[in-house]
Amino acid sequence: MAFENYLEQIQDKFIRENLMSDEFLDFLQGSRMPMDELLAYYRCAIMEIETKFKVLNEQFSLQYDRNPIETIKSRVKSTEGIIRKIRRKNLPLSLDSVEQNIRDIAGVRVITSFQDDIYLLAECLLQQDDITLIEKKDYIQAPKDNGYRSLHLIVEVPIFLKNEKRPMKVEVQLRTIAMDFWASLEHKLRYKKNIPETETEQLAHELMECAQISASLDRRMEDIRNRITKSTEAEKEKSMSIGDVIFHKNLFH
Ligand code: 0O2
Picture: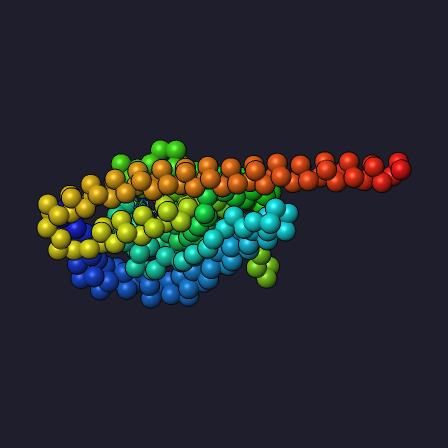
């Protein structure tokens, strides 16, 4: 991990000293307007996807008296982040290449309380006829080696401009509060420099254990929620049938 951090530092230094000064600046100057325009389109795509999730949340709230979504966090990748990824993947530095190959410029993160709501929301989104699924990565069914869990979807959604309909790619990450809590901490560790290697290894091990605890917590919380729902429904049915008896009694006497 310390070696990876070291490599990352060298890479950052290289980007700053080389790409930022010539190729990077040429790229930015040559495509300043189109780049700003492209990023604005990604912001529009984020609005479209966010609205879709907000509508679903509203509908669940009306029909079932519950909100599957806790929070939605969105971001457009920084130009520096885009260039870094283009470089890392050894791709040509052009706007076309950026749009074709970098699929997480627009990112929408949907946080739920319960794991089954992740699949419910993903299904509802993917059923919509203006959404095209490009790729699905299920890190909940198959967590990463470090313990990372989330459902990732790369989707295409159209945005409607003055004279044009433009399909835009958006990365949707769906995760529970517990998964998000874990990922934020792990992300911090990944970007912290100057931690001794033995300590980094120890922390990674602890994080792996926490990932297992958080997965178990998600399962138990979901189970408790299901039991509460079941007994509430049973109570409702019981009081309805008592109501029926009273109703019939009143009707026929
Ligand atoms: P940021 O700052 O969140 O944007 P690809 O885009 O397909 O070329 P990759 O790595 O195959 O690249 O995509 P993947 O696995 O779908 O992961 C992309 C994003 O998921 C990451 O974005 C993170 O947000 C999140 N992610 C994936 N793995 C981990 C992990 O192990 N820990 C944490 N904390 N987050 C993870 P970026 O670009 O890394 O960063």
